[in-house]
Every structure is written in C-alpha cells, then in structure tokens.
Amino acid sequence: MATLKQITYVKKQYPDAKVTIYYMDIRAMGKHEDFYNKVQEYDITMIKGKPSEIKEDAESKDVIVLSENQITQEITELKYDMVVLATGMAPATAAAQIPAAAAYDVDGFVVNSSDAPGIYGAGCVAKPGDVASSVQGATAAVIKAIQSTVRG
Image (cartoon, rainbow, N blue to C red; front, top):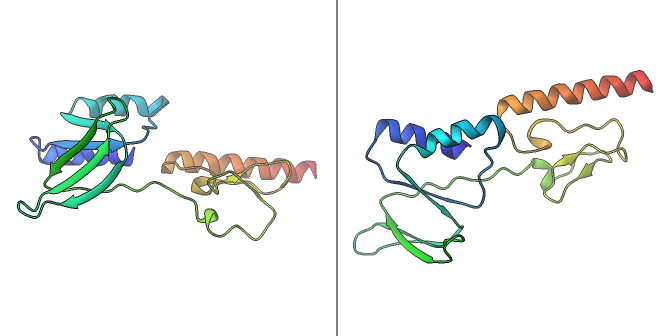
C-alpha cells in the first residue's frame, strides 16, 4: 500500500513518468481495494515477479532490472532511469524475541495464544499494517488484557 501511495505522488508531479512495479503480492483487500483501483487508473505497468538482478548499463548508465514475469513466464530485462526499492515489513521480534513466553508465527510476529496468557501482540509486532489498523489492534489488545484481568 505504501508503494501505491508513492506512485500517486510521482504521477501527480510527473504525469508522463513511466512507472513499473515488480510485486510478489498486492495486499489491497477491503477498504484498500478502492485505492488500489484508483492507482490502476494511472498509466503504470505491473509485473508479478521478483527482480533477480539489478545492474547498470555501462554505456547509457541506465539501470537494468532482470526478472521473471510469473504470469507470462517471460524473462524480462528492462532499462530504467531510476529504480526505487520498497522494503517489506519484518517485526523486531523476528531477530530478538520479547523477554517473556510468547507465541510467534513463522515470520516472527507475535501471535495471541492461549499458551501465553496475558501477552497480546498489537501494532506491527502482531502483523504488518498501517497506523489505523495498528490503533485498532492496540485497542483490541487492551480490551483483551482488561478482560483477562477481570476474569483472573
């Protein structure tokens, strides 16, 4: 979603800019789907595939991106003036777990589990998300904590 938002900034300032997105998946369900469709109205190219190599053309100084388009199964080698790399989100708990007996998923996000009562993940330690969903998750964690205190 952050990448899609950045595209709107570029296209508003430079309407003729040619934008290509290489993606593994687009997580624009629910309330984000309208925004995703709006971004599609801009003249952008989307390639489902992960760049395998990025190199510089020695003569033109263009940036060359090599990738396999997973939909067409074509190997692409496209030249660009500029490449911007968008990073994914990983929780801090993937590298260093919290000092308590908490449950984690395969990516290191804290999972609310009955095996770890009283520990509730919220915000980006529980799942990747924007500010609004982080606030909602934090509110839910507080309510669960209050409920567990009342029951205990």
